[in-house]
Length: 92
Image 1 (cartoon, one colour):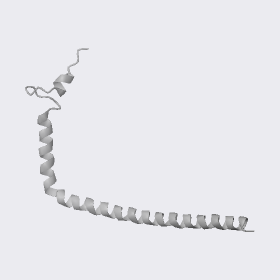
Image 2 (cartoon, rainbow, N blue to C red):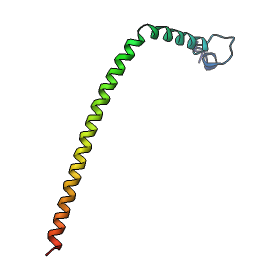
Image 3 (cartoon, rainbow, N blue to C red):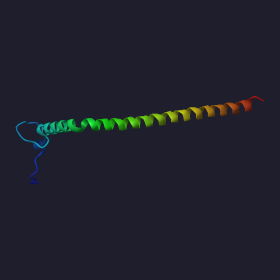
Image 4 (cartoon, helix red, strand yellow):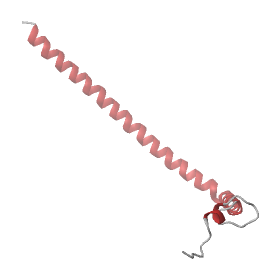
């Protein structure tokens, strides 16, 4: 089994002396790169995302209101129907 790949401890070890594939140095570079790129166009992208979310929220809110109204009306009709049925049956 003479593989030339680095061992698990070489890749994920916590010793600061060796360069590892998943070490802190790589993570620091990713954070720095992400922070610098998000400053340039992040404001416009965030505004676009907020607008899309707001539109979706308003549509969902309207759909929920319509659905609640349908449930309310359906329940009212059902109760009236049951009430009418029992009044006919037991009133004579």
